[in-house]
Length: 329
Image (cartoon, rainbow, N blue to C red; front, top):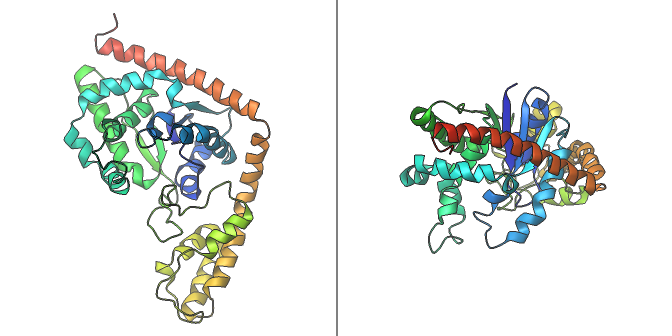
C-alpha cells in the first residue's frame, strides 16, 4: 500500500483553507493509502519559539479539527512530531545536502519571511530558514508517495524531491520522490481579499467557528471594490465572496453571478445567503468535533497510539538510512 504523509502546524485552529486544501483529501484517501498525519509542533516553534504555550495549547485543537474533517483513527495515524526523534535525526543528515542559497530561493520561505520581517528584525534564524529541510524529513521518514497540500506548499515539496534525489544518488535509493495532491480549491482567498486564507493574517473562517461568528465574519468580508451601491452592476469574477459561493453554493452560483451583474442582487443579501450555506456545510463537522471534544481521554489515546505506530515506522526508515550512510555501528 502506498503512503501519504500530511499534517498541520499547531499554531491555531484549522480553517476552511486547510479543509479544502488538504483535510478533505486526507479523509477521502485514508482507506486507500497508509496515511500519516503529523502535528508539526517542532516546525511551529521555528517562528513561535517565544510562544511555546501557544504551540502546546493548539496541538489537540489541530487533532480535533482533523477528526472533525473525517479522519478515522482506525485508518489514519495521527501523531506528534516532537515525539518521533528519528525525524530530527534525519533532518540533521539532510541538512548536509542543501545549500543556504537554495533555501533562500524557496518561494514559500521568501513569502513567509516577508510576512514575518518584524519577528526576524535581528536576522533570520537557522531554524526558520531550514524548516524546508525538516519538512522533507517529515515526509521522507515515512517514505511517503503522496502529500495532500495547499498550492502554497508546492515549492516545499519540490525541495523535498530534490533532497530525496540527492540522498539516493549519493548513498543508494531509499526514498521515493513524493507527488503533491492539490485540493479542488487549493488556495482559498481570505475574507479580507488577500490571495490566501491564513491564521496569521486573521482573515479566516475556522472549522470550529460558531454560526454567530461565521455570520459576523462574512458580514464584513471584502466584496467587489467596484460595486459601491446596492444596485450597481457587480463583477463576480473579482469578488472574494462570490468565490465562496462557487464552493458552498455551487448549484446557485451561476444565477447569483447573473443577478449580481444585473445589479438586482446586493452584497448584503449575497453575504446572508453565503453565511447560511457555510453554517449548514460545517454543521456535521462541528458535531463530530464536539463528539470527540467531550471525550478527551479517548483523543489522547488516539494520539498516543498513533505516535507509537509512527515511531515504529520511523525506526525502520532510520535503520535503512544508517546502513546506507555506513554509520550503522
